[in-house]
Amino acid sequence: MTSPQVEEKTSEEGYERGLGSRQVQMIAIGGAIGVGLFLGAGANIAKAGPSLIFMYALAGVIIFFIMRALGELLLYRPVSGSFAEYSREFLGPFFGYFTGWTYWLMWVVTGMAELTAAAIYVNYWFPEVPQWVTALVFLVILFGVNLISVKLFGELEFWFSMVKVTALIGMIVIGLGVLTFGFSSAGDTAAVSNLWAFDGFFPKGVGSSLMTLQGVMFAYLAVELVGVTAGESEDPEKTLPKAINTLPWRIALFYVGALTVILCVVKWTEFAPGVSPFVAAFAKIGIPAGAAIVNFVVLTAALSSCNSGMYSTGRMLRNLADSGEAPKAFSKLSSTKTPAFGIFVSVLFMGIGVVLNYVVPEKAFGYVTSVATAAGIWTWLMILVSHVLYRRAVEAGRLPASSFPAPGGSKCSYVAIVFLLFVTGLIAYDADSRVCLYVMAVWAAALGIGWAILKSRNPEVAARGDERFEKVG
Image (tube, rainbow, N blue to C red; front, side, top):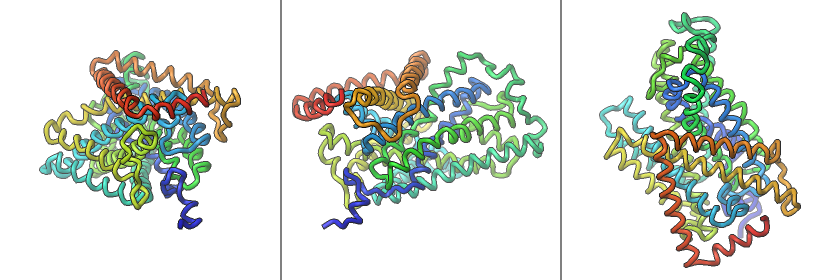
């Protein structure tokens, strides 16, 4: 017989509520700091100059709208399936099925990309070690961590995030010191006027700056991960709102603040694609082992993202299985209350990244990041549309109000929907990135065929979902 103490620590879905406030906060913070900032910002600075600061701020506002919409839904009904479950409830069973599998795809390909990135960073110290070997070692270690318990996952993610946060704060403080006191060789040219002194704040035009939005949105991927933790948070009613409400200062400090300081210390014309702006800034300042320090931080960011990917894919597969939209084997929990089989299958697919590192190591990273961006945009759109429909149901008296309403109601969600559709248009316009839309079209066709087969073999699954949908619609 289960003791009351154990019952208190177990969610309705059977998960252990093993993520404390400290860990959820750091998971939320770490979700807003990744390889997209540490590495990808270099290419975007070369494209847009100092105006990239504005692009990150603009996208950050939209991300906050998305997260407040998700927060309202989470406090209405906190479930581990999160956005897939809300899509199923407010848009119908097919959309829940499509969103769940698409989010799973996003994290699988992101895991591939991050394994590739981690292997590249290790090559900085050990160039003689083959990329695929390093990727395989990291894959096995993180798989073991996710199997043991959610507490171990949360603790590892806490320290991964702590490294990233500490490093960024250190970079900002050092940069401000150079600006204020003028020490090091960078002090001779460091100035706030660097933000506009070289062909203005938009040196290559507004159009070129807007084209960086797709890369900027990739940098924000995983910020929604805090929603997946809802079923395993010790006190979701307190921890989730706090984590979401701290998002604006995190974006202001870690993205807008860090980039502003760096572009004041180093002229934007000195940055180049493929080189981390933080590495370049440390080299300019002349800090000993600066490049090695940043390389370690970016390695941490990559491993953090891959760790989160394993966590979320297992939970999403279990939600799909519980809804009859994936094999029942994915619904089982291990003795440590983790969806072990779902994590195992996801890791097998992430292993494709190891194969890519063996076959085409120089192209592996670029092959998968654009697909992750498109899948992420779909997920965000589903959160926003579900929020709009939820608000309509509340206003009509069909559903109870959430204890964490989004400011502006559904108006901000409409603004964010338009913005995401605009970014999708930019992706379609860019010849280099539109390939991800072709991949997503093939993925949608495959899921459509899968849904037709599912309905023919198990019609009660769709009927059950339709009943739930009709209650709120």
